[in-house]
Length: 137
Length: 376
Ligand SMILES: [Zn+2]
Image (tube, rainbow over all chains, first blue to last red; front, side, top):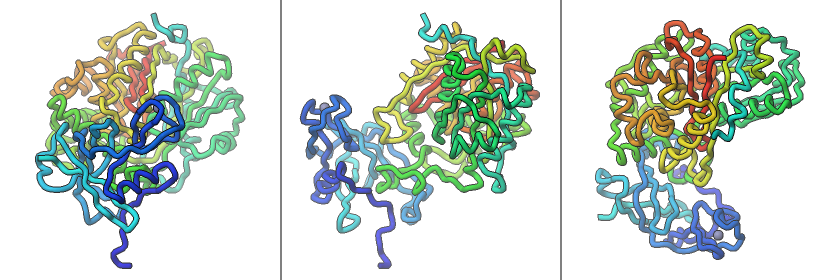
């Protein structure tokens, strides 16, 4: 295959599988403790707040605020060689957890710490869809 | 009242040594570690048979290190190859000596990352954010510096002051890897790596090794050079967001403040008493973050504080007088502790801080540490 996907793919395990299944269906989900309600990402084998084992996945709004963003001018993997410079952002979801993702779409020159963003979904292989973020007008 | 007051001035650094710094494909970690250890032994005049404690960092196998050195101590600790380990190791050695678990500890750090082409990102250090192309400690510091710019109005020209001052010190250090002076404009025009950070915001990657020998204050009296005492230590971790490595929303301000205050209280001094600062500088913003947490300037003011050469020899707070990680050598904090000792002994030649009596070491990382060294 000449156009095989050359970037790193997530290592899917029992803990994070629901995240990637939701993403494939176009939903952003985070792990939530059914005992104390704490939401966290990446998922954890026990709740970091109450140490409870009973946890579930909650579909969230996909809206949040830019914590920060950076522009990679170096490709640490060959697969990103054609993308540099590319933007990586950190987003604090309205529901609490912080995710690292890519800032894509128009108007990136208006990026600012605290700016509102919303999720979009980019299928990269038949199995994997990456949640990414764009600035909200 | 200091919780650690009973440890004040109990333990001394008596011997320090380092290899040359550079690109040494012909020698391995153990060979470099042995050279640094031999130098540290010679520095204090101790027979190697007296070493009964061994702490190694970034050395693949502690027992092989002992085999190579021909020592079998009664206390051993291996530490992982993370940049934040140096003061963690020194504090552990201090506690072990104080408890009588050993009498003379050799701490040995070696790094062969240059000759083995370590990148500190990509495939060699996988993390959960790889699919989005997010990798490397430098990117985390770029994320934090962007926040500092947004929150406090800090500029890249202010950040340049850090790199320029530290490089200036390297020009005065014959052992430093990078010895040509740089200007603020050089910093501004350097190759972008992960913006807002550029090449001159990044530490070097080079081979080398460092060794320190510690013992109790009483035992130190019989050795070759005047001891340097550990007068204060402080520590605080931040593990809540460890899945975003090397990143903190508040630049570890609270943690550094807690660690620094513990060290100040134990030593019975304050920030104004510090004659020189040895500050873990994996990336230039780390020095700005440190200055605030350590109380050398108010929170958010570090950009303005460093303007005009504050960190240079002759400035208000000479910082990383050996050239630090940015320009001397990437010895992950260990060489800065050696420099602290040499400054207090008055061995630093053209880069000597006059009348140097109190030196602070600081590591602003997910395991923040502060040490205060004084003349014995
Ligand atoms: Zn819980």
